Amino acid sequence: MNIAIFIPNIKPICGRSKIGVSLIKGLIEKGNNVFLITNPESDLSLISYYKIKSLIIPCNPYRKSFYKFLQCIFLIKKFVKENQIVIINAHHRYSEVISFFVRLIFRIDIKIVTTVHSFTKDLKLVSYNADKLIAVSNFIKDHLIGYYSKKNSNIELIYNGVKKEYDNGELNYEKGKYILGFGRLESEKGFDILIQALEYLCNKITLPKLVLIGEGSEGQKLHLLTAQNNIRVEFLKSKSTPWAEIKNSMFVIVPSREESLGLVILEAGIMGKAVIASNVGGIQEIIDDCKSGLIFENGNYIQLAELMSKLIINPTLADQLGVELKQKVVQKFSYNRMIENYNSIFNKLIVEN
Image (cartoon, rainbow, N blue to C red; front, side, top):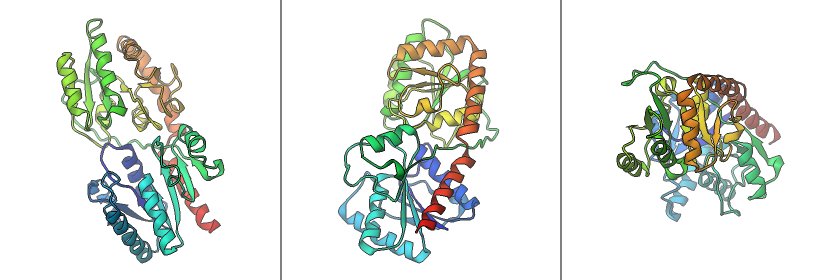
């Protein structure tokens, strides 16, 4: 089967990008011919190993224009015909819209499947009109039905899956002496809430260092916050997944204001690490509070601080939570399960055609 993964702005620390790259790998392993459609701003080194044929077009959702839109439509039409592509798997609303117009204008017999990674609003008329929608959590599925009025029968729930790919990276700090946060340094990820929690705790207990890995528009603000409050934080550059840092941390913090599911939690979980996370989006589909992790109220830095203190004082509890989380991730959020589900849906669409 010839499948095109259409994903803009591929970046090392982006969850959507990680899942797109995992799908490329997994679908190839299933015997499919996989192609990539993306834009020049993408980091193609992340998929260079697979040596797949790629179409690079001006499809950046943040730099749209009517002229670029037309360019994309004509280039994709040619690419689809030349490579006999039968399915486009879009990983952004803009990717879906472009694909939809390719089919509409040129009457190409192609199926469109959209993976919905984000909680979005507005643009109801033009959003999520693919042949099949894949929701990455029940939270997203319910939103598609409730807000966008999509039919339940047209939506498939496929949880994001992870695969342990740990290499024995060297660290410059002592094992088990730091807590970890990683991801995009953007407002929705809530790392400023984490800094507030550390400030609240700093005169109450002896705090380990925070290692914060990522890049984004909030980076400078977070640097200033830590400097002003004299919080010990080490900022590291973005990595695809910081496996070594996860393995050697005390536990992981996910203080998000918005989260469709929480890939960071899955990555920490597969390494057997405890996670403290906010109660937003699909996070509670992964974490059972006080069993496979700890949950705090969105934005409540005092509650977050209290939970951090609990795990700092009681590392045995952190170990127990990490064991439970790993079991749940292995059973419910595996890479193999995700690939099987995608492959099954794609095959059914072609058979139905």
